[in-house]
Length: 385
Image 1 (cartoon, rainbow, N blue to C red):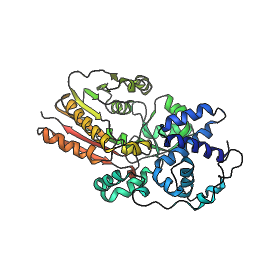
Image 2: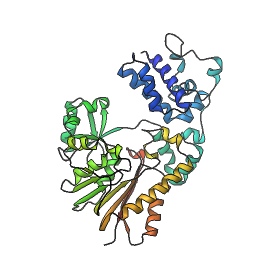
Image 3: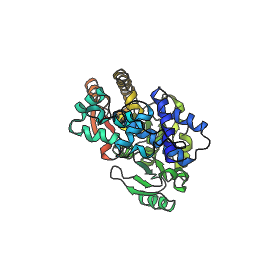
């Protein structure tokens, strides 16, 4: 496919997203119909679609409309490129710009320039203060790719050297001692020997940092209560190889790949439907807005509502109460979100401590996308003896 044909494909997919279809579904549906498209074509089209999703408001303003076509015109203008170079109407290219389209469009301002809904822009300003602009700007860009060196099999420098042999270039990242940022060759990562032999795992640097900040001591039983795919379970297993590690999720299907991932990593993780007894450490990476990871899943930025945020905070509070009962005397509960919003982070911890006055707070920290990784928050809560 030509570059212009890729733009036309992105326009068609964006129109389906505008109509309410999920981006991944729209991309998959297009791919099934477009057997002629090669892997590079699909990757380029995906990049166009997600670049627009991250900048949904500003591309519409720049392009003078809310259609896929207007937003792709707006994307080129936002990137200081001339859309007329690809909008030619020749072959499979988008039709040439009309006089109206040439004249349309303005530079965005306010919440549109931040690429946030109005209500979220107000929340960001209240919660992040002077770091609002840099955070919103980071969410408008593509997320870097990180891997975690698996300490059960190697260390960071050895993993980096082996990845280089596999054609993947990386640099150490300051957020975590196991973190490597991929600077080239990211698309081939899962085909490398480093990955198939379990030397590395794909994991955001801030997510790795959350695990590193947990004061482990010498635990014998650890529970990952909201395990999902198991990334933090495996990172915990690497930090505490002598401990029994258990993984639980309200939707067990999310853990379906965890046994295979654990085998590859050389870790032992037991998936449990109902946690039993008490644990030295309970990790709860709770369901949240995902606002810290909107570079990777930008649709969430536009689909989140104030009502849904309220539902999520209720769920988070319930999980904190449930997990507290699973921690042994003197043990620790780690509350974590990939959120930037105070309502899901500090406010939850303040409310928990207000109703559990015999608990105390230990290490806690917020991470912003402008720090390099995704946005995260984590707080260690220490149970009474």
